[in-house]
Length: 352
Image (cartoon, rainbow, N blue to C red):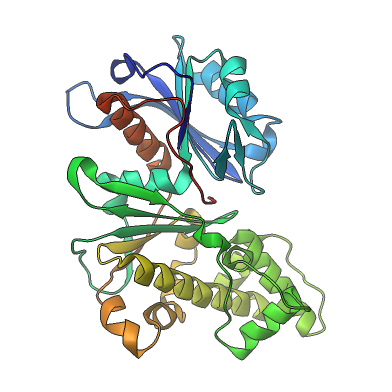
């Protein structure tokens, strides 16, 4: 996470500020302020969703929101953004445009721009409605104490972990979507061989994401000697739900099974006894197929891991406003603790 400007966050808790969740496809922007009743929460004054492709720069997108919904000058902004923060720039191949913090601050006339990873923000939102609105997928029906994972395939594949503790606990961003993909079936080996005919690195993100689903579908068509008929991840998802395209159905089966392996790997790595939340409208549209897929079998892994993983509940939840709410909660926490400094830490990951 980072904050562009050396000034402390003086006065921020009482002033409205911009909070934006910037993914590879959509940007969710809100005007927020601390809850006026003194509770440790945030109040949403205005909220909109934008298609990133409709704007040539991030300042242009944010200015469209300001022009439509902001009546008084706003001088503070927090971004939940897919990518890594490298110096003054947010770096991610899935973003619609480069993001430079100082450039954004100057273009918008802001005193300060703070940035954290988009899935890091979702993990902070586990203190709010994100933890209450999911549909149960597998495992126990109720969570126990322990680390909690938020995972989301969208334009990329993001993940973060929330570790409980004093003052809201600790959130860790990850680059888990960039981990090496490991096939678990003969068909998955065929797909991987098509992706990397000479061997080499293939990240999970190239299979478990919207673009990954489309890639798998196209490969399956070619393995059958057919030309792909569908050209978007949404079309593949819809065809799978309708059972109108054999390759679309198989592509979603591979996607769901691979997501199970990925989620189980992370649940083992972080001992996520608090549960796993699979975030995003993309998954919600596939919920019934996901529930009937090999997700749970692959999530549970082998005999040695099953005892732990069978006690980990998994839910599917809408991304919705949770990213901007989590970003705002993190921002206010920095303000109230007085830790708003020029550069705080690096963040990683990739989001929807």
